[in-house]
Image: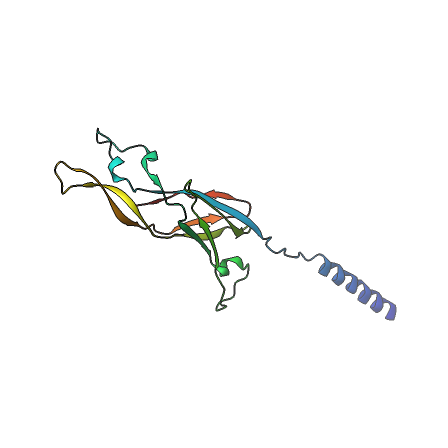
Length: 170
């Protein structure tokens, strides 16, 4: 009887050991990057907004935003944690890009295989604007200093992605 008991105990231990070895392990999210790029436009020459026949002009009539304009990208720190904890003071990840003379910006942000939201914030700027002076007859163009603002955008990225996000200041 003692041998049967020992064999049953040994067999149970083997089965229990085999069952615990077959347990799946979770792999952590692999960190990577995504690239966000785009061209930034501004309507700083209002005199080319309407064609002679009253039709809207081609899209190319907008001007490039001034070189040096800052674009800021914000990722909520909590979104980077695969198991976020309520109440933990996560720090946001902030990246910036500068608009070049060609109107282009490019930034690399952290990203994972899981979709991640990125808020894009555009700095205000002041530049010369060409506008119609309606106080003079006949009406003619004039140059004024004008401040331009742009509302925030939101994009979703995953690791390895290249996202084009053009922007237009009004």
